[in-house]
Length: 91
Image 1 (spheres, one colour):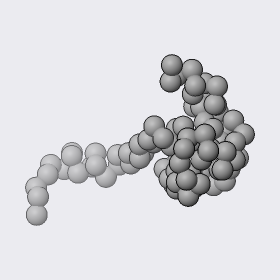
Image 2 (cartoon, rainbow, N blue to C red):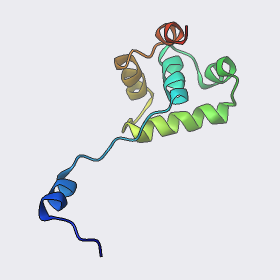
Image 3 (cartoon, rainbow, N blue to C red):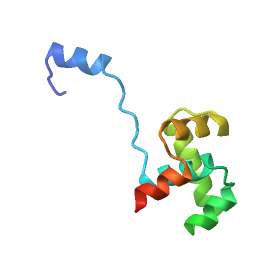
């Protein structure tokens, strides 16, 4: 068993869990969805399958504790991830 100090143990015990990192592609998908595109529209625009879009949506929901599409849209808008904003970032 690994020995650690009491101070370190308490810090680890009460530390906030690290939020999983959102990938670049997940940000892209969120921005396009927040801009009003459907899953199929996002798939067509990014050249990926609709199943992949659905996987990215699911990952976003899990990583950010989002319950539905409205939550995802609010989250994306709060991050400035609309389609127009994302296109400006790519240039």
